Amino acid sequence: MKSSELDLILEVNNLWEQHAFWTKIAITSIVMGLPYEESVVNRLLRNPLDFARIFSVYYNRKTAMEFERLLTEHLLFAAKMIKEYIAGNIQDAKKAEMDWYKNADEIAKFLSHINPYWTKKDWQKAFYIHLEQVEELVDSLINESYNAVILITDELESHALDMAEMMWQGIIKQFHQTSQLVRS
Image (tube, rainbow, N blue to C red; front, side, top):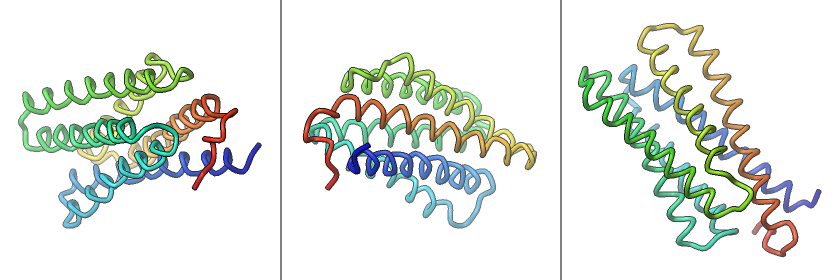
């Protein structure tokens, strides 16, 4: 394995782990009404920027920015859904949830178009699992089922690493024979 491949693996793994970690902290902050909610959400929203930075190494700037936009929407729809649900606005929460799943479909379609080793079906399945885990985490926190929170957090992190592996494997396969698989 080339050091550039290892660097990519470590960086993508790190970003997906951060995505899972900060998602969990943001959800906890929102559900519990913690005073640092805004700061945590802002930190989580840095995650799409960090993904765009990696994408810009392999894909053009427009592609990197589109992934950043889609992943940012993913986070904003989740936050809206959770806040509406907590406020008792079930119709608005359901609308945000529908938008969230539609966004997952858009991300899956987008990724399958930029990399021949990524399929819409695989990314859609991966994102749906992620969304279901987030929903389970929200429910567990709201219902004060803290042992369940621990279990779902472990699942969320493990699945994030599965998503990372799918991502870095596709990038390595797509760019393995070019000098483009070099980290700066």
